[in-house]
Image (cartoon, rainbow, N blue to C red; front, side, top):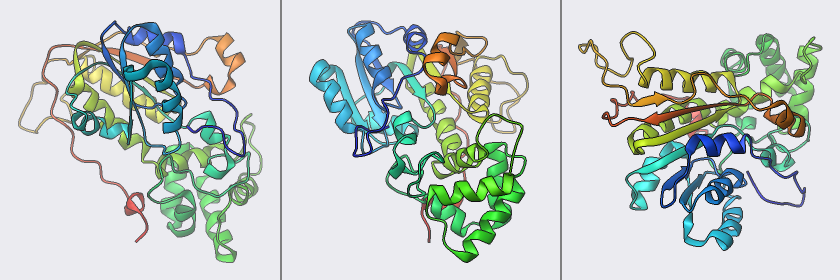
Length: 336
């Protein structure tokens, strides 16, 4: 999610532009939130679709200049707020905004971040082992050099679905006794040696790098918090559109939308134990199943192949009680 650098990353191609615009259905005079601005492709599409206003949010300190370029064309119709999309309720309140007509969340890492070696996201380019979407908190290097072997294996398995997570964690711990692991190339070589060869078509390091990125940025907890914030921010009839690229993310979105629309059975985990009935549904499902990219889009942009898009529309029912705060490893707040 950054502009041109000395490394000249490839342009970011926004996923499912037409489906996003159709899902949010922007109206003239409406106010919409793009919680994951990135290179601004979705924001631009919304601004072009109707004479509306967009509040763009991003934690990446290097994308504000891209927002400035769009402001040059769209003026006051675009406002950029620096921060996490999970904090959008506070960010919007500080800007004097209480309600909006639509919210878009495009979860995951952008092509610009992947293709810029200095960001440390990719096993395809050697660079500092960082992976932070923002500029604070623990890096991937901090984790692989300090975390216990069992915990490291658990992260790689849970967030990467890596069957050889224990072997990889063991290899990482052994390697760091010889020298600190500070480069993406180092880690990729360690993982490849531990995994050796899969029948899969993906690079052996893919799942490990994905897992570390998700953990470093606390992406799943960020998503859960953002969905609940969207429930409180959207006006009746407002649309929530979410794009995910990882099965764990999609399951969170699917569960949230199904639960809040009354599709899921059983008592909500959000309710006190002494309450037996669920509140009224706060959303109506617009997409009963996730929408996938077309074959032509995947051919033009292979990184879109795992994307899933879901849409729900806000009802007039009061927002449900917020879940308990998510507890994370101290590593997410920095190394003591």
